[in-house]
Structures are given as C-alpha cells and as structure tokens.
Image (cartoon, rainbow, N blue to C red):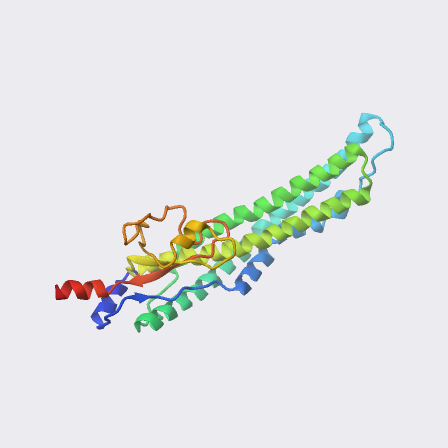
Length: 286
C-alpha cells in the first residue's frame, strides 16, 4: 500500500533533513543462501566416482569401438548427474530459494520499519506487507534459479573436458580425479561468491521498492567502504539523488539506470532514504 511518508513527517512538525539509516544484509543470510546454491556443485562431487568408474585409457591406440564404449559409459554418467541436478533444482533448490527470499524480505521489512521509526518517529510496523515487493522477489528468484543452473552447467562442462581430454592424452585416473575435484571446488567457491552478491542485491532492490512505496523522492548515496572500490561510486558518497531518475540534486552527474547501488558485481553501496525538510521551511519563510 503506497503512502506519503515525507508528508506524514512534515505534518508531525519535523524541521530538519532526515537521512534514514542504511539496511545491511547479514552474513548469516549469505551463508544460508550459499548452502542452497552450492548444491549445484555438491551433486557433481557426489558422482565423481560414478563418472570416472569406466576411466581406463589404453596405453596404445585400440579399436575405435572400445574407445567409444568407454566414452559412452562416462558420458552416460555425466548425463545422469545432470538429470539428477535438474530434478533437485525443481524439487529442492527452487523451493529452498523461495523460502530464503521470503525470510530475507521479512527481515528487511522489519529493519526498514525500525529505520523509519528511529529516523522519523513514524511507526510502519502494522502498515507494511510483503505484497508491494512480490514482483521484485519473483524476479530475484528467477535470476537465482538461472544462476544455480549455470553453476551446474559450468561444472559439468569442466568435468567433461577433464575426463575426455584426459582419456585422449591417457592421463592417469588419479590426475583426472584431482582435476575434477578442483573444478568442483572452484564451483563451490563461485556459489559462495554468488550468494554474497545476491544477498546484497536483493537488499538493495528491496530498499528501492520500500522507498518508492513510502513516497520517498530522494536518496543519499553511501559508499560501502570496501577495498578497491569503484572510483565513481566513491565520488557519489554523501550526494543526494532522485530516487526514480537518478538525477543529482546538485546538478552533477546522474546515476545510470544500470549502476544503482548494489547492481554492479559485489557492490555494497547503499541508497539511504532522504527526506528534505529544510528546503520546505525556507520556501515557507521566503
């Protein structure tokens, strides 16, 4: 339900500009999300033995039929694992992602209400519902289903390459198994990084959704303070922008639509809700 928070604050007699505190997603949320996403790598780790069970390259060239028989056996094991992943994606991973998103939204809603109460004195606890952000949650869910599927696809490609390249060059099975485990390990690490990024992205998206719902018109950019930051993100620190258009209040460079806080990979910047009241007072006095 849309409402006009700035108007409510003005009516309450507030006489200073207000910047609401930023909402930070927790590491625990990222850890829980990572536990879901890493299943795309775990299922391949569980099937390594089955994939290389038929791996026994001959020391010398043999008849093509023998090579094909062995290759077919390994390919069948790879295909079977991919099929198992798709089943798990539908029955386990996607429902788990949906539950995680619902919990994350509930936590964000509570923190947003607390930030509004602390900054303005207005209590939104009984007003806010999940309905206004359902589309954002659905979009996030679809994106993360695609991401976890990509983790599995990339893992499958690396494993297949290691197996068949190793077979062609007659690499010892222990070396091929080591390469496969390294590929799986890399996929696990990638899933953890994705989880941290997607945790931050959802929080930033919910920030904008809740601000728009509350009739907020401006935001103040707050840089994350991370090492090796994007210089243009640092340059925005503390500046005020239009929530919808990204135009700078001081007439400076606008925020591109595809570079809002949290959109760029690993971006931890935040857009804090900003309610300008001093300008209104000056307008009344002039």
